[in-house]
Structure formats: C-alpha cells, structure tokens
Length: 196
Image (cartoon, rainbow, N blue to C red; front, side, top):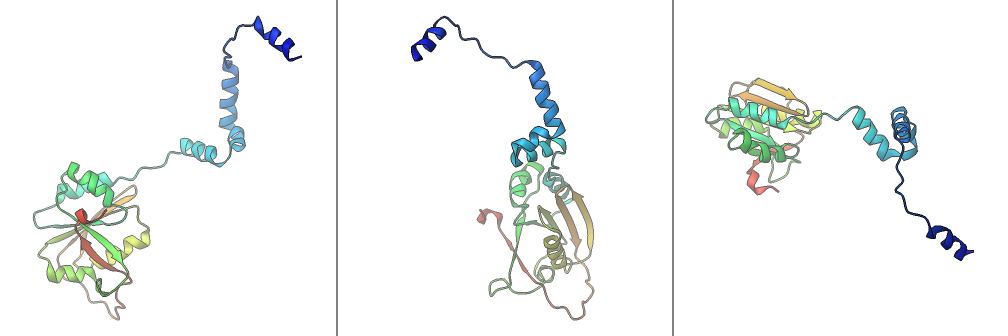
C-alpha cells in the first residue's frame, strides 16, 4: 500500500498553499472579538490589551531637560539612585544636565545615620538650591525623599510627567517639627560613576 501512495504522488507537482483573504479576515474578526485571544492564552491576551491601550512611556527626558534648563551655577542636582539612575546616565549628557549625584535610600546604620538629609545639606552644602529627579518610584518612596529634602528649605518648583517627577527646594528657614520621630530611611549621595 505504501508503494501505491508513492505512485499516486509521482505525477503531482507541489503547489504552494495560499491562505485566502477570507480566512485572514475571519482571524482578524475573531481576534477583535476576543475569541481567538481567549484560545491563545495569557501572552496573546496581554499583547492584544497593550495593542488596544498602549502603555504610557515614562518621561524622564522631559523632567531632566527642564532641570537642565533652569539649573544655576552652584545648584545641587540629586537623582534617585534606583529608577532614575539609568535615565540620568543616558539623557543627562544629551540634555545638558551637568554634574549630579545619585541619592540612595537605605536603612539607618553606622555608615548611614538616621538624620534628615535636608538638614545635613543645609549645614554642609553651599548650594542655594537643591533639585531632585525621580522615575518609576512608588508614592511612598517619593514621599520619603521629599520629607528629607524639605528640611533644606521650602519647595518652590515641581514638574510631573508620565512616570517621572522633578522638584526644587530653595535654601531657607524650615519650620520646627514637634516630636520629630526621625526618618524611617537614611539618604546618602553617591557619585554616579561608582554605581553600576
């Protein structure tokens, strides 16, 4: 019987199979209706959802460019050492950001004391203004940074863009806080060239 099959195929010419336009249209309709997506599983559902509603991109370049445009000589620019580190390394030179330090959040320790970083800056820095740029942070993490830096002086500027934010504090008097429990995290500035 196998020889009979070989004889039947001997006179045939292989012809490429073409998918009719109607079949392509049917798949598109099923995809749009969600039927095919349900059959294909989670990866296809996720891709279809993102195609229908694209994710917003974070705008680190926008906030870094705004800081670069407004920065004055002597200003201190701090960049979140987590989410914004790579954006500052890439976009900083392109937008003219200049020198900056990475601001790292840590648990208090002997090398990172439990003190308000804004107080430390006010006492030890000659900077007239302090800038802070962050991206990809939770609201709680941003609040920890801003609580620290608000001890430098009043917040005078803020720019919020999709997934990124920048703040500025000007040196000035800070109201005393009664029964100050101290910060939950310590902050320290590090040179970005030493962090990978």
